[in-house]
Length: 381
Image (cartoon, rainbow, N blue to C red; front, side):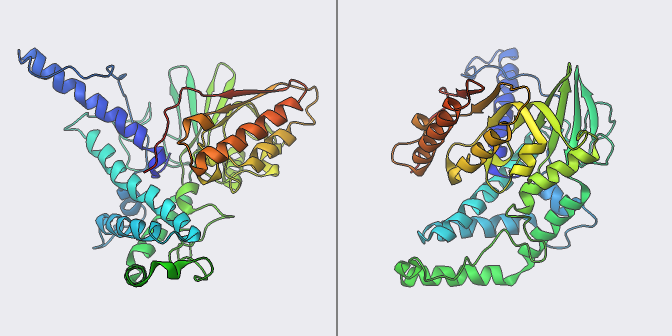
């Protein structure tokens, strides 16, 4: 849905798997049996990719990127991350985590573009069914923002061109600002001198703030890259699934209103992929009251304390006055046991499990819980 690492690395692995099989097939057809068969199943045929890549975002909208290269952003972000993590200062480490996700996501997005190119897997980019030509960017209001895929209808809820323009402006300003390089130098010098100077309270704020894009600020705590997420309504046989990416609730509601899905100010879905892993910045009581679902899917694994306990409670409370009372389901993508022992992720997910079970026990059987106990354990080094 956007350039963050946690939203692209699985797709990259799928494409790498896809690329391994033609190599094996080619050697086998030529009688070369020295090449081993891949030790994973042959992936399904991929007919197309919908993705707004980083380099396309900063070069496609309005005008070229001048002489500044995307490599400069990647290198700058990559250099900042280890220094910020090394401070052990919570505020700086939060910024480092954001930067790490984007810094990793950028080259992975570039790898995706390379793998799907005409001389590799030859998978069309941003060419929905019914559209004759590929496009570097996809946004609402452009041809292809509604399309049929078999018996499913896809409607692009967002982003609009404005969100993509804001994202591009932010990256360019971040890149051109010499203060960023100076701040990095200063931070490294202070680290070399004495890391303990970064104890709690010694800094008034983070030297880097991805929430303020030099005139393109965040919106109610949600950064511009997340607001620029691709979001789709998927409809089939009278059922509806809303894919929200990491977008902020006001933009989701605007998109639903613009596309005619908010009838009388309310929408009921079969499935809602809860935005941004259940972050408190992306879901409030107003949204939960206007958009309800039979099934709520939480993709957080405890990182950054997502899914947030307040969001779980907000959604539960929004269903308290259902008339007639209806069952609804919470689906969680993992369990606390699947998080590495001794990590904050495991501790938080234990709290998630406790809160969810407490709410279910008070729901008179209306709330049904599902935890994915087969998710791979994550290891932190």
